[in-house]
Image (tube, rainbow, N blue to C red):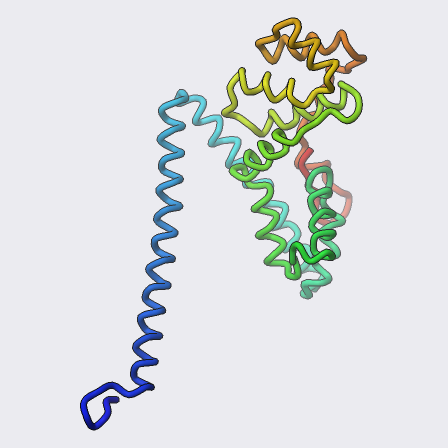
Length: 242
């Protein structure tokens, strides 16, 4: 509505400004979505240029498998909650932690501590599902593994260090031989690192085999587990990542 002298009213300007604000907000969201799609396409192109078709097929199969495991776990929990008429967020969050194992259990405990300290807020079932996917979907698994690799240090036996290093390597597919050796040496205690440097080790397989002679080391590498044996009742299976 315009005033008698032909200028817009205060209310009219407010409405128009709000309309402009909403339009800009929508445009920014669209730009963000497009940027994410571009990043995804660039990653796909990089993968196509650096690997064979069989490598890509294997990566796709593994990615789909891991996503299905997370989604299946959440789906089973949803069915269980519905069957037991557990509709409250508080009740669901208390129950779901009982069905997590290994790294998933550790992640959950960390999130509880962060929530208590105010660093993180998981106060609903939907929020929990979002955070779980953020942590364990493949694209995030590789990123998180790289972060852990950058900080990894030998604090106990060589056996434990090798086990932890090998576990991280399972989640990092596109790392070069040189980078593997560098990161492996970087985290070792000085005496072990200097011994491998003295031998001028250039391959990770040589580094691992040489380390065996420096410590009592069992070569039984742990395998990743996602689906424990079926229970005897109708409760959902526990899920976790080792």
